[in-house]
Image 1 (cartoon, one colour):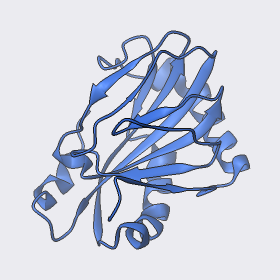
Image 2 (tube, helix red, strand yellow):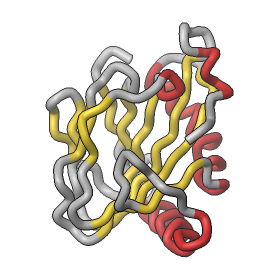
Image 3 (cartoon, helix red, strand yellow):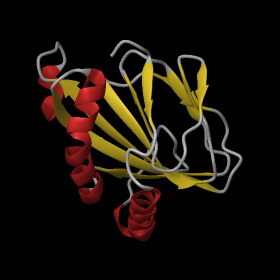
Image 4 (cartoon, helix red, strand yellow):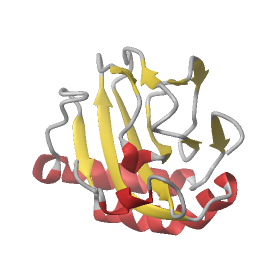
Length: 166
């Protein structure tokens, strides 16, 4: 990938994004997990529907980054008013990361000091281990995101293909 990040408009339809958002919302009381990165948010690790989507989108992601990829894990969050995502880089299993907007109130993400605003169904692909990224305080009511992570099959982080822990 030549740039810090690549934005893909409408990687999935708004209808599909809404379906996934509703799917997560329905499951939140029974299947959500504690997230120490954003403790007041609702989080999901390796949700079945997001895993299917991660598999479906891998070929599209590979074309944009010009690499053959292994899936590692996926993660979702339903953010709420006041949530903040501190500046960070991700672990080795997130060599190639995809953040997918599943809807809610608009909220920008910062990639290497550049503010990015996605629309529902849009995604941003970035080097999760290399690019500092964060979100400032959320002023809306809710915002749902899916994060899908991959590693280069022939790269120095290929060993992380089996790293799917939270």
